[in-house]
Image 1: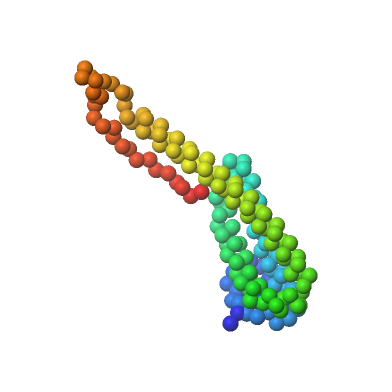
Image 2: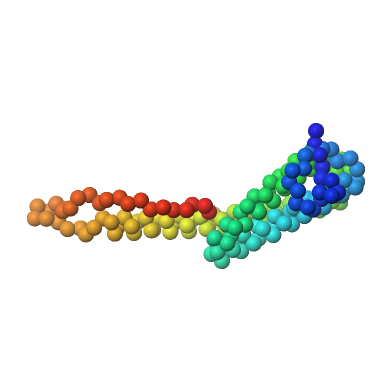
Length: 168
């Protein structure tokens, strides 16, 4: 059995709404208002995260992660309701369905942009980690000194671990 958002739950950020069939035009309107608000909030977070990453403010962007995850979960639940009630919603509120299609396209574009910026930030982070690790290894290897028999003197380089936070 599925449940749609109730009037008091709409736009309140509730995430524990069980699914159910949408029975009438009023419920359909409330559902679409709630879904549109979720999309708006998710787009705002994606755009803010993208701008922070572009500005190199990675730690600040990571602070948005929990909110983005919660909104994405809410959006996915709303899409489940939408799919379960697609025929009914198409008949009750066809204009809202069309608006939602356009919003979904805008959200997909924002997601593509966000993913590209996240990938670029990850690549920069990986390059920095490799560079630091290489520099640490170089400094720990000691000088290249050769003895009279042309053999390298001194023991093998001692490996020292480095710690890296790979949250991004």
